[in-house]
Image (cartoon, rainbow, N blue to C red; front, side, top):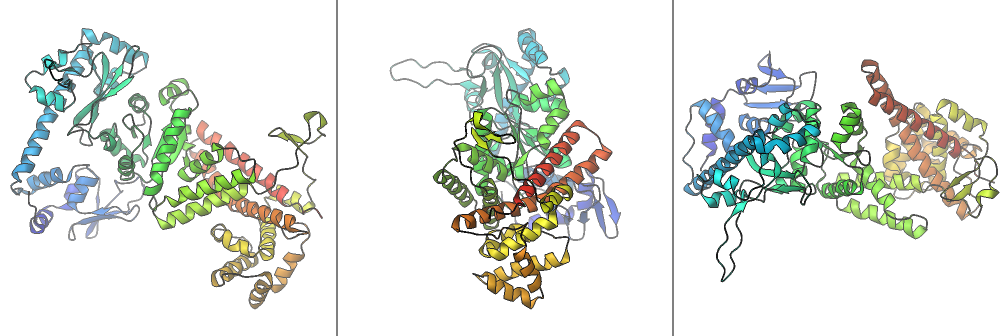
Length: 624
């Protein structure tokens, strides 16, 4: 089929874009253009514009942009040629004659769709009949309603080698084999050919549809004991398992409205979640999430939520997906990971605790970078310097797999900050048996830890007020003492917005100095600060005797001070982020008080308290 640029331009010219979009989206006139709430992301204030003269739409919120053809493929989910045919029919245009070979392939595909549709109709009829009694009882036991059963087209394959084959005898046997409905045994030399037989026998049948809603394959769940528990259609001209997501036809429109898509492990998880009211759920088809499936998810939302079981198999699946996503990452696009309670799948959780409990799991999803950190940190012991170096090497190797340079840089910085915070303070000497503990101490990893020294007055002030400025002064003093640390933590430092103007100027001066000079020493920094009338402030910070990371008696003290400085920077960066999220959660609870919101608020408050306690510890002077 030859579609020339001239023909496509004529098709666009004959299509009134506002009328096309207005068929499914509420639009309003705005001067010479039209406006609407963007159908590609969830918004309350219109930022989506339609310009009929120029023939394109554009969203200033999410960046969606295109013409009439792009609308049909992106918003309606149609393949390119189907979009062309529908637009041409509406515009009264004839589509150019197809290439004979392409026409033959299309005709064959259409006839294969006829086979899968006929199979689907037959499976549904069997579920409603006498032989479907056991399957209906199974669905009832799982709490699925008749409405849900019919919405997902569930059916039943009787335990027979030839009932489907006999029912579809109007189709050539070769087509039934090609669609995966029959199995044709391989011929063996010297032996008579064996007859083909039904692939699915004694199973609950779940149709797999493409994005247009056409049945392309099936998944069959065994009702009693036996293996495999689930049996999928083989790959066929209609069905590419690595590129297909179960329930995509229903989930894609729902995801565009909610701005979220949830990936779970299996068919029945999707169906149970949908019955509970969450329509934007999909599942891979018995394999780990593939690169093509990740790209398909990103075409709908920027950060899909992967929700897997809390057992080892579920966590391995999550980690495989994370590793596959790393090379594909692009600005604004990532994955989030939610973990179900151990021993529960989504159906179990919803039936036991309600859909709010499942929503709470989704709201607790962690970003991809956090999953990478947690999994690598827990992978091997970290008791020796060599083992910790191994962790650092593994993190660096994973960062190197990220193709996008900007994202690779930010991942590397973030993981290094987590590493520094984790190993900021050396382990205390061991050798104290539990019976030898003194009051106030604690046991950690089988070792007695002495109680922290009593807080100084300044440290107590940090506990009581949050102490952002006091800790920032200590951090700035540490950076004066160890100027090479400015570049190490530059990204984190640049994100700080001190409430004190003088401290903000001081921090800016340190960052600018590191930008212009590859190596800078304390005396050189003092000279630069003097040029900005900050010399006296710098000398005052270096003289501070309570809140600082500057006292160094020997090389061991120096290393300890640098580790504490790294952790202090991580803490001071985290505090405003926690405050912001806590404020947002509190505002949301004022409008809708629910259990998930309350739990998140309490979690954030505890995290803030823990940070404040750690700040108080860091505020102690180094032993002299």
